[in-house]
Length: 335
Image (cartoon, rainbow, N blue to C red; front, side):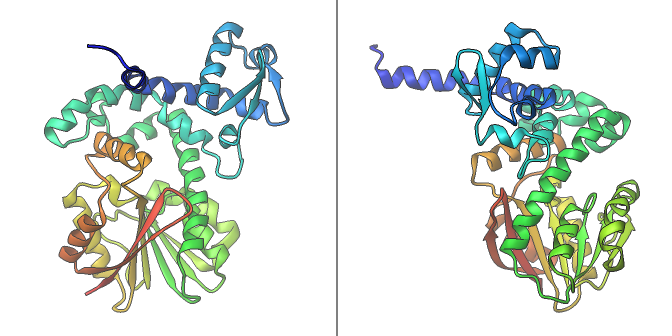
């Protein structure tokens, strides 16, 4: 059988896909070393960066050339590197920074779980606890350094997604919002600062709620209530708008139904529910769907999947919206 250029290109593409793990860890190491920060003010030599990061110059050159092939860096002259627009997303504190998210995806606990994905394929269950001995949140509580990376990654994503949600969704000026599983409060803070007439309640597990209190108290304490609790048991009542951001993706259908029914019990008669999850149709969404299966046994759901789940929980899907982020919005009302 003769090989055409197209055949050879397909082989090269598939071979590169088999080394996708290399991309994850090259990005993670680059983020941990702070390479994008070191290039913030312009080109620098690999020798300078190796000296600053205390790394082997030859090994670092190879890593930086992989980053260049990924479009993260450019090498305008041999051994000199500069950030691209993608590279600047790995800078600490940059607009839309994903530095800590890149570090999170390269964490040892996730790297150890992916080889057991076949178990999830056969059972539909998580592999994370099987490979790490604990669920992910307990793992991060027991490993504070890894937990700090996770918290920073979630804060990065929450802040930029909060801005995107505020731009995409028209919030009534005098709402009472309940952010269910709101983490450290990045989304609720974005909404309250953009809408001075809105009041908010954040629900999360008690130890997370304590961290949210620290973030929110200094800026919106007069309009925000922090509640420690478990959304699988109960959610605060009487809200006009309940938000579930990156919550249902963590859940099996059974636990997702429990969350939705708890919201249905609590919501005001004329209230609304806003579900904010990554869109399933993008490459990121499809890959994230596998991540959710591996970690939680959860999944991203299509619009029709959500509509069916919502109906069983006593809601009617009213509309969907894209945002200027990976997040898609699904609005529903009680029936």
